[in-house]
Every structure is written in C-alpha cells, then in structure tokens.
Amino acid sequence: MSLDIATTRRIAKLARIGLADDELETVRQKLDGILDWFNQLSEVNVEGIAPMVGTETEAMRQREDVVTDGNCQEAVLSCAPDKAGPFYTVPKVIE
View 1 (cartoon, rainbow, N blue to C red):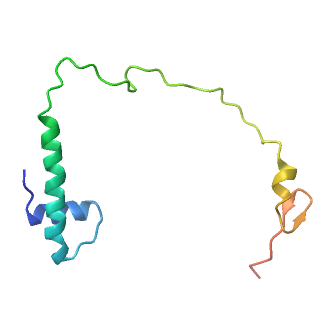
View 2 (spheres, rainbow, N blue to C red):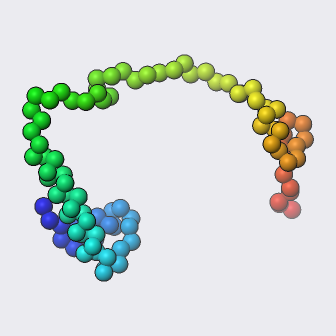
View 3 (cartoon, rainbow, N blue to C red):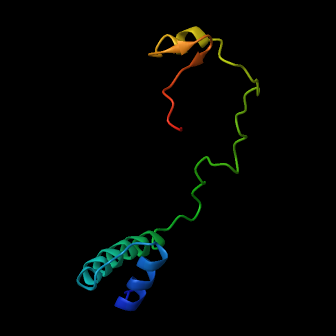
C-alpha cells in the first residue's frame, strides 16, 4: 500500500502535526516504510501458535486498597525552607 500526499497531509492533520509542504514527501516515504513492515508481518504464518500471555488469559494482580497518610510528615517538612507548625509557608503573591 502506498500513500499519496493528500492522505499524508490528512494523517498529519489528524495527529496534529504541523508539516510544511516540503516535508510531506519525506514523511510519506517514512509512512510507506512503516506500512511495508506491517505488510510483512501479515505474511507470517501463525497457524497453531499459542498466543502470548495477555489480559485474556491471566487474572489481574490486585492489592488491598488501603488509604494511609504515609506517616512521614516530619520527614517531608524537614526539607521546607520555612514552615509554621505542620504547614509550609510561602511568600504572599497576591495583594
């Protein structure tokens, strides 16, 4: 499959990539190369080959959903250049 300039321009627009007219031919050639790789992959005979492990065959590993505060308030505030009690203090920026 070979792309034309109009299709390349449309792909660039859909991908929100700004291309100058002199860049379109280079990008078209690169996209043609990518499509050629896909065409080569479609020619591979995978009959009788089991699929790799994916989401269909394996259950998702889950952990217990526990909310914690981390218990590290002192460690976090130790890096603060200025603090007031358990809070960071910052210069006033709005009058």
